[in-house]
Length: 341
Image 1 (cartoon, helix red, strand yellow):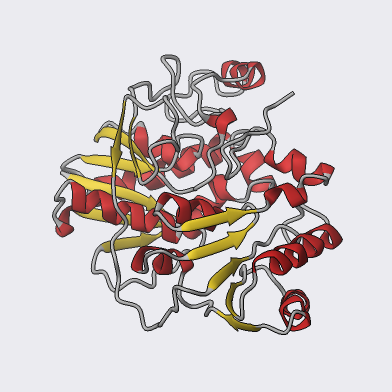
Image 2 (tube, rainbow, N blue to C red; image 1 turned 90 degrees about the vertical axis):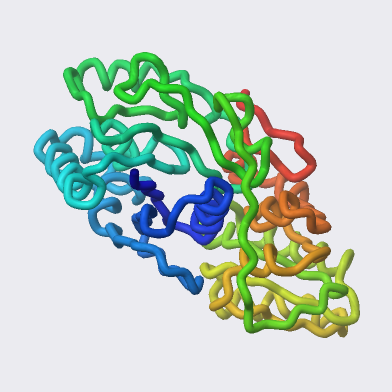
C-alpha cells in the first residue's frame, strides 16, 4: 500500500515526516506530490513528483481566473481527473492512503475519490486555527452550485469549509495528524500527535537573544504600511536587548528591511539577520527555549506549539479595519478569536 502526501510548504513536509516516523511507514511506500513550486531543502530520500503546473491550475491561485473557471469548465475538470487517475494507475495501483491539509482543494478531492484511495487523512500545515473552516457545513451558495453546475459530478465539489459531510463524494470521517492538538478543533474522529524531526543545520543560534519574526502582511495587503512599521517599532522598543536576531519574510523588500533594521539602530543595539536559505521551521525544531517576538505570523504559532517562549503584539495591528477583516474568525496567540459578526 502506498502513502501519498500533498506538500507545498516546509511545515507540511515536516508534519509528513512526523507521520511516517509515527506510523513506521517504509520509505519505498511513500510518495510526495509537490505543488506551489515548493523546493525541498532537507536531506531526505523519498520519491517525489512536482505537479506545480497541474495543481496550480486547479486550486492554489486563490483569486485567479484559473481557479474560478475550473469548476465551470467540464472539459478542464475531466482533464484534471484523467491526469491524476492516470498518475495513480501508474504509481499506486496497489491502493493508497492519502494525506492532505484539507478537502477544499480540488486536487485533494480528485485523489480522495479515486477508487484506489483506501482512506484520506488530514495533516497539519498552518499554525493559526481557522475556526470558520472547522465544519462540515456547506454554504447555501455552494450547495446550489453543486446541485446545478456540478450536477452528477462524483469526483469533486465546491465548498467553503474543510471537512466532508454525508452528501459530498468523499463522505468518510476524518482522522487527523497534528503537532498542535487544538488546530483541527473537535471535527476529526481522532487526532494523532506527531513530532517534527530534527535536522542537522549549518547555523549557530545564541538562544539568549530575542528573535524578532516579521511577516509579509504589508506586501500581502493585510495591513497598512505605516501601522505595521509603528507596530514593529513598538515591539523593538519593548523587547530588544543588546544583541538580537531578525527573521524577515520572503515578501519583505530591501527598503522595508532597512526601515525595520533602523528601529534597532535607533536604539543602539545589535541586529543579525537570519539567513533566508534556512527555513525558520527547521530552526524551531532544532533549537530549544528560543525567545520569539512578533505579531500574527504562523511561525509564532509553530514556535508556541513546539514549546518556545512566544510573545505576540498582534493587538498593535487591530486598529486597522483591513487587518481586522483579515483575522476575523481566526485564532490569535492569546487564544482569543475575532468571531464573525
